[in-house]
Image 1: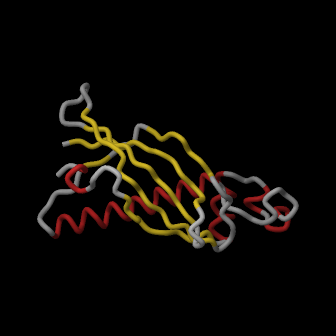
Image 2: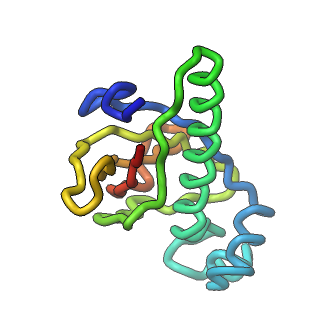
Amino acid sequence: MRMTELYTVGEKIEIGSYTFTEERIVHFATRFDPQRFHVDREAAKHTLFGDLCASGWHNCAAWMRTFLDYWMAQSVRLAKEGLAAPKLGPSPGFEKLQWLKPVFVDETIAYSVTFLSSRPLASRPGWHLNKILNEGVNQDGVPVIRFESSVLEFE
């Protein structure tokens, strides 16, 4: 089965959500982005953010975790229907990454993907390059992250 058999161009799919607790924000930032507005709530009050907020990279990682969970569930669902899920991965990259609004403690971000396009790769018969728009909005519906990514699909 191909992605184009599952999704139509322009179709937006809600893939799940992630809540950024103080513990999660500090844990991620301590390891990967230890800036004071990500690791110290008191120090963060004296920055342009005014409070502890998640690293943009944490937001990207949460999108990835949410996408992988969604895709695993989709694969199981398709298998139960007697269908083989498209074989995806790896990704050759992303572009147009925008962190539109800071994500603060206890905000829940709902993530989505929109299927943009699919094209065959001339250099690899049977392979396709799929492009998707990835977005996240907070509990108030305010956009907080947006980027386009590519994923390889193979037979």
